[in-house]
Length: 55
Image (cartoon, rainbow, N blue to C red):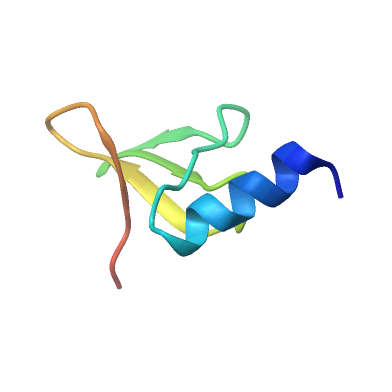
């Protein structure tokens, strides 16, 4: 694993996820994607900021 990948996973532990641009999809309920490092589901809020989806 590269240093950037290790750093990205470490950021996930602290709640700083990075969404995947390639997996972002527009759905009837808004934009959805996943974190590129850990795969957690994310959605874009009304403030245009990406948040972790809580189920």
